[in-house]
Image 1 (cartoon, helix red, strand yellow):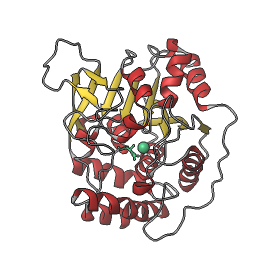
Image 2: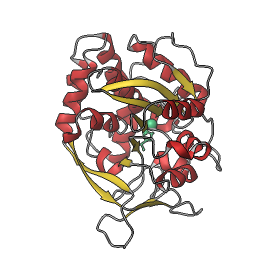
Image 3: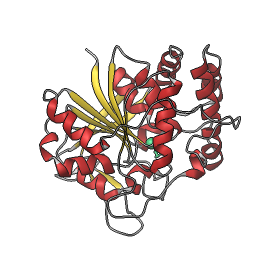
Length: 315
Ligand code: BDR
Ligand code: CA
């Protein structure tokens, strides 16, 4: 049976691929709605981008606007990675205009109402942006926490250094207080942090394989990823940028791609050099009970061939 998911996101190039991978996998995933948060770029742009991506897939799935800013801090954005629009392309060609409206209901209310009205353990929440919408939903309606089947998060870093500060991964850093509340909530939480996403590099052969597929969607995505690759290649000196967010969806489609381990994780919310660090007890150095299942390893070839095959089915 397909997993029923709500995808909370801030597109963003890798969020866009995560959305498309979900839409292209109806056997494994039923996307109930996209909830959008401010993150990579301000909310007005992440919302527009989410609608454009759904339109690109020739779909009309509902898109809900969420929180424009973090709970306590000013928003930090990532135009340096994703470009001014949040979805700049290598060719400079913009995505087509959206044909999907913004739903009236607020994203947080949509999450709460859906999880309350659907059977217990039937909804999986996936978060690929700052955790503001999720934390606000948990604060407004703590009863939804045990009703969720799973919360799958792209965020944090156990072993790896940070990517927005030396200590912190972007999504957790943007709203560390939200992340802290979510990680401490007792929800069944699975974390795809930089430990795993830095294994998933968009190398030239992988980008070429995607571009070689028939159909508009693969060509457009290859053009987007061509832009996305630029900043990270110059930053890291790697063969390609890490394709973070689709790890969450790939895990729901084909969990055997990844190895995971239960660990204790706490988010640092103290102002200072470690703000937003996900302090991860990788080796069981404390007596704290594991509260998160952390992705540690993955098969990058399998991951990219899944994405290429699935995106090729969208027209
Ligand atoms: C995360 O930050 C964003 O720029 C990406 O979309 C991803 O969710 C990686 O740190
Ligand atoms: Ca994201």
